[in-house]
Image: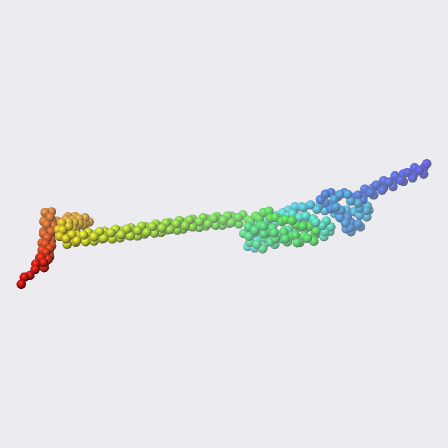
Length: 325
């Protein structure tokens, strides 16, 4: 009976020991993590998320590595730019572990190593740029930092996905100088725009005056053509009137000559009376004298043209009488 009871106790102890060993060999890994396994201090494998078995007493979990993308703040630091401007700059870095073994055994204190590497490269990049370029070319700075840091951290089994500059803060006196410079630049642009507006206005005004002058010249030319045409027609009319009067006189019409001479006389008197510098007009004869002169001119013409007609008739009659021997 004692032997059976002792055997039962041994079996219970063995079962408990086996359960303890099994419990020690079972390891549960959370999602987003990987565990490194070390056997006698040497890395053997990495445990993925889920239920995993290891050899108790021989294997142990070395490092628990976070495989999710992580955010790392780059502390604020003072940087001297290429044009000797002191600025304060900080940033943020995003990275993800791709190889748990390398991140655990290739570098000690991974977070601190990435942080220091980002700080030194940030000083290098900003130190090679002028302040104006550093303030206006953040995308270029981010790209350069990403390429440099990612290449440097590749042996550590991580991937740097993004580097962003959060803030670049120049000194207060430099900020005031930049504000004055910006104000002067804006005033300069305003003056240039105003001058450009005045110039454009003058150009448009000159073009308008030019077009107006052209239209006026065209109008004067057209008026000159019309005046010349009118004068030509008037001259033609006067020539025709003179021709008609001459033909009437040749035909013995004394009234036409009287009308023509009287018209010219009246026109001459009208021009004398309408002159601007003539205030008083002295008439050399009375109105009756004007009529008498016209009658005298008509009588003289009648005598002249009468003699010519009588001579023509006598010539014709002489030629028609026959001679007798």
